[in-house]
Length: 497
Image (tube, rainbow, N blue to C red; front, top):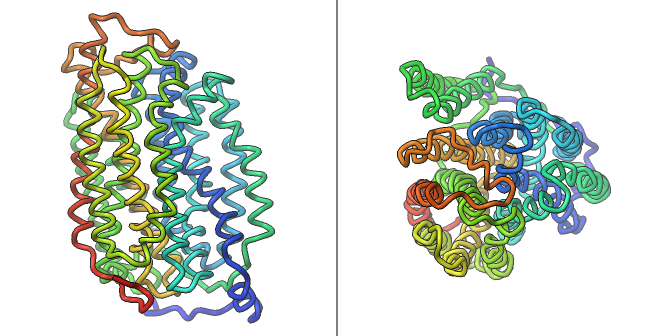
C-alpha cells in the first residue's frame, strides 16, 4: 500500500481557471436548492407521523424508523461520496445524487406499507449522501478564502432554515393533499434543481482516488448496530442482546478508528484533518446540533396534534417564529462570520438554544395558551441563526483546498451521525416516558392523527412524557456549547476582530 496518491488532473487544464473566473454566486444558489430539499426531508416526516400511523397502521417507533432509515443511509456513505466527487467530479456526483433522490421521492409517495416506505427512504438517503459533500466541496473550491465565510454562511443558513421549514411545509401538505405529498413535492423541485446545476455549476478538476471500502463497511456496520440497539431497546425491554448489539457497534467503531489510523493511502476519514482545532470542535458542535434539531421535532409535533388537537398545518405553524427568526437573521449573521470571533457567535447560539428548549418544554402543557410557545420559539430561531452558518464556515476555513472533499464528507457525516442518533434516542426516550406514565411504550396517540384531542385522562400524562422528552436535545446541546467556547481565531489574513 503506497503512502501517498498523486493527484492527476483529468479535466482540461483550462477548466479550473475558467471556473474560478466565473461569478461563483449563481452556482452557489443552484447548489443550495438541492441541499435545501434533502435537508427538508430530514425533518418533514415528523409532522406527518400521526397521519402515517393512522393510514399505514403503524406505531410511533415504526414511523420514526422512516426518518432513522433515511438519516442512516444518508450518514454512512457520505464519507465515501465526498471522495467519489474528487475522483469523478463534484458536479457529476451532485447531479447523479439529485436524480436518485428525486426518483426515490416518487417511490416514497407511491408506497402503501410502512416497511416499503422505510426501504424507499433508504434509497432516498443514498441519493442525499451523494449530494451534500459536493455542495460544500464546490463552495470551498470556487470561493477564495476571504469570501468563503459569506458563502458558507449562506450554505449553513440553508441547512438551518431547511430543518425548520421541513415540519411547516409538511403540515401544509399533509392537511391539503395527504402525507404522500411530502415526498411528491420533491419531484418538480428535483427537476428544477437538476437543470439549474447543469447550467450554473462549473466542471472542476478531478483527481485519482483510492477508496477505503473496508472503512465504509466498518463505519456502516457500527452505525447500524448502535442505532438499531438504541431505537429498539425500549420495545425489547433492553434485553441482553440489545446491550450486546450496542456494545458490538461501539467495538466496530473502535476498529474503524484504528483502521483509519493505520491506513496511509486515502483513508475514509483522514485523521490528520482533526489536527486543526477548529475543524475538530466544529464537528462536535454540528453533531450536537444535528441531534437536537432532529430529536425535538418528534415530541413537539406529537404533543401538538395528540394533546392539543391541532391539525398538521396548525401544529407546524408553531415553528414559524423559529423559522422566521432564522431567515431574518441569516444575512446579519453571515456578515459577522468573516469579522467576529466564532467563539462569540456560536457560543451565544448554543446558549440561546439550550435555554429556549428548556423553556419550551416547560410550556408544553395540556391547557395553557399556545401563545406562550412563541417567546421560546423566537429564541430558538435566534440560536439557530447563530449556529449553522458560523459553525460551517469555521469548520472549513483553515482547510487546504486539496482536502475540501474529505473535509466536507467528514463534516456532513458527523452532522448526520448526530441526526440519526437523535432520531433513535428520541424514539427510545418517548417510548420510555410513555411507559413511565402508564401509557405503554408503543402508544401511538392515534386519536391525534385525525386532528382530534386525546381524552383528558390520557392527555395529561402524554403531555408530561413529551415535555420530558424535550429535555434530551437541550442536554445534548451543552456539548455543542463547550465546543463553541473553545474555538480559536481563524488563520486567514482577511479575518477581522
